[in-house]
Amino acid sequence: MDVLNCIKTRRSIRKYLDKPVPWDDVVTIVEAGKEAPTAGNLQNFKFIICVDAGKRQSLARASLDQTWMQDAPVHIVICSIPEKASMFYGIRGERLYSIQNCAAAAENMLLVAHSLGLGGCWVGAFEEELVRDICGIDVNGRPQIILTIGYPDETPPRPAKFKLVDVTFLEKWWGRVKDTGFTMAKPSVGNARRLNATKEFLGNMANNIKKHAEKIPDMVKKSEKKEE
Ligand SMILES: Cc1cc2nc3c(=O)[nH]c(=O)nc-3n(C[C@H](O)[C@H](O)[C@H](O)COP(=O)(O)O)c2cc1C
Image 1: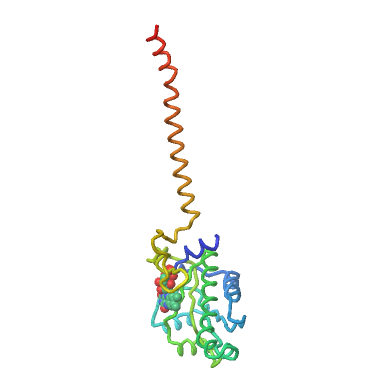
Image 2: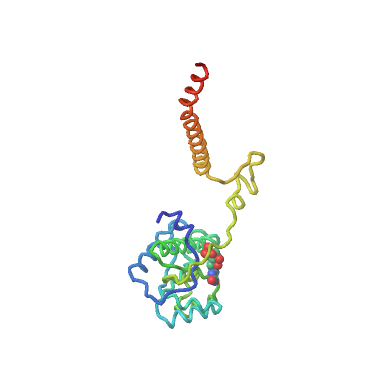
């Protein structure tokens, strides 16, 4: 699966088959998380893999009773180590980069899970202190995201997403190109469409010429007869 196709077809999965995830795949998924870009390459995150059924049930409860979570055979609790980032980047490191680093890791993991035929969901709604207790996270760590992973038992439709042109500016905030019919359509897509239209037009024209050309000998014969 190419990367863009993987990104476009990934969906949040909230229904899972009762089928274990091969450990190799779990390792591949966390490996993808570890490779994410991080501010200053700090890699100030830790991934807690939870497969124990009781623990997954507790995590679901701690996540505002999102009971569907417990059916996912694997939970990955992504934690930041904010102090490590604050040592280098101050408050921006602590409050922003720590979260961004975990978010980048989370998306990597979801995409790789999807590419392996697995499904996942990003869970952000949970009570931090409860998750801290369940996983024994000390004062150095901060749970940021829980990922649920498993084999999908649903094929959710693509949710409504904005058009590219609605979320993209040029050069400045609300920068739009006016009066040029600017769209975010890819030139290659437009060119392919125009090329196909031209091919069709020329094909029709060739058929018409052929049809008329076939009539020419008869027409010549008729006019020769008239002349006689
Ligand atoms: C920061 C964040 C928090 C989220 N928290 C939850 C959550 O607590 N529960 C849940 O079911 N989905 C959660 N989601 C998943 C979104 O609902 C989902 O990504 C969105 O509806 C778009 O659907 P898609 O992932 O299929 O494109 C969260 C996603 C993000 C990025």
